[in-house]
Length: 362
Image (cartoon, rainbow, N blue to C red; front, side, top):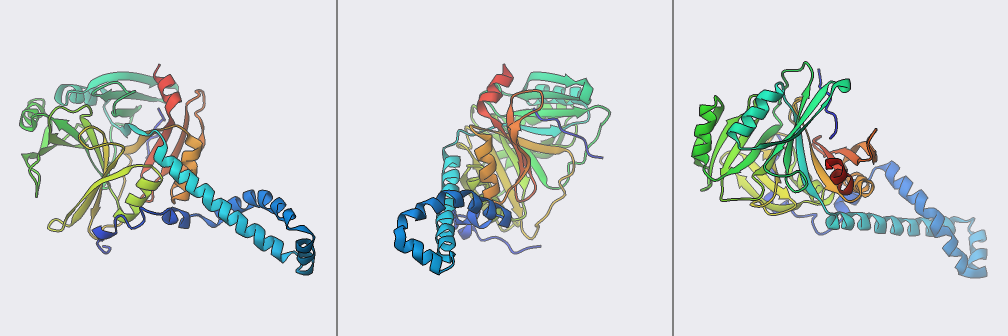
């Protein structure tokens, strides 16, 4: 959907604090910038001042005696209260917004080779392709079902660029399969790389394996029964798990599904999404003890999430400390409205208007 342009140790978090902000909007409110506070106050000041006229003659005289300071103080208090109400309304709206993870976008060096690997080894279907020669790139959408109801992959090939740096921040994609061993054998037969043989996950019973696609992106194969959403995970590493969870819950409206701490291997994970893990795509955020920053490379791009209102979404992102990198509005040449942003760790997301997205598919 959005063109992807090619690019030339801390204290371990306490799991008991993961929800310490979940019952209040104070976390997001406290992250408001000074300029944002001034903007909100100025907006509400105009509606607050006229109400003071009802104070009557006595209030008027008092105001004159005090040099107008009371008026300013009262207006400021009313503006502050109104601002707080507005913030709470926006964050409450996020919880009710109809959101869904639409697709994940990343760059590949050989589009046809990658399509062949995904369709022959992972059982995906090529849903559509679009070539934009004037801007020198091609997109291919692949997945396990239609884009209007499934989480899919959007591959981007930029003319003449055959290699990208994946970096250390990106983790893996998750694919649910009914038989991990069988899938691994197929991958080997097609010349794919297996970086972790099938077996139980450390500290658990779920059978998993890790493979790599032609560009080196890792895929975790998870053995599960039939599921409506086989493309089930995007794993990214973050430098502050508490901060990341709060942001994804408040600004993105995701639910914290579970956490798992593994002190033996010095990492903690948090699973967040818009539905249960066994039927929906989720974000897996990983915190490695003592690591606060990662090299993001230039290969992985972003996830796209559906929303009913990109403008309100932008408000919520700012309230929660995120950075809006593209202001909400329609894309040039088409009517699809989007807003692009960065989370506190610098991972990019694009929110897409739900109605416009369906029209675009048509």
